[in-house]
Length: 116
Length: 113
View 1 (tube, rainbow over the protein chains, first blue to last red):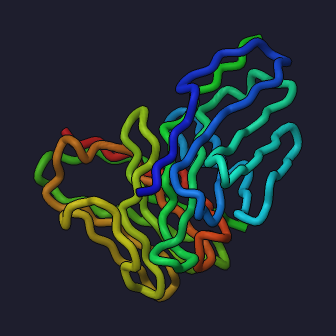
View 2: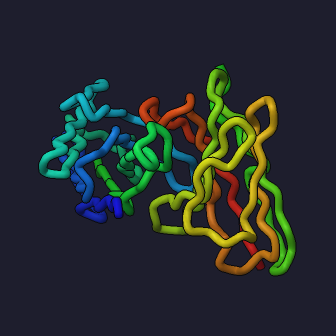
């Protein structure tokens, strides 16, 4: 059974700090891993998508890595800003029965607060 | 280019009633998945539709059903609503295959009283 776990559940940092959010998963046969941002009461905004053949992806101040052998992904946020405050979710895609389609399995999320 | 559109944004229903939620996928996407997100939890997969058929289903009772139309839009129906069905319902679209990643809508907030 594929499971995704995120640590910590909540994180509070001062503005300007670099930070790392952690995501672990139980099945190394992952197709891809996607990081999302969710503002309170809102939908999910995709931040980064890492394919199983890739080690990392970067977008602006965000960098996500994927290590299939250890079952880990990290989201690095540089020079954090109050506007980065949100819940960050990671989700793994494993396909279904060897096919390339299937559900995403989500972690519980990390609630990030960046205070001025 | 419009992303994923969901309607309505909010609704309140009484226990035992039925509800229909709607989703229009992002342009160029042909696969629609539905997720339920309870407060403080990660989204849970309900089912996925492709070529107008349910292709994969999560651990949800038969009270949850869906449909996909020829234009790829989709509906989620929930019968005999329970208080525990109160949640944010998210629609996600993709081009056939999880490898392409998913685009999510803003969700429908369902409250059952």
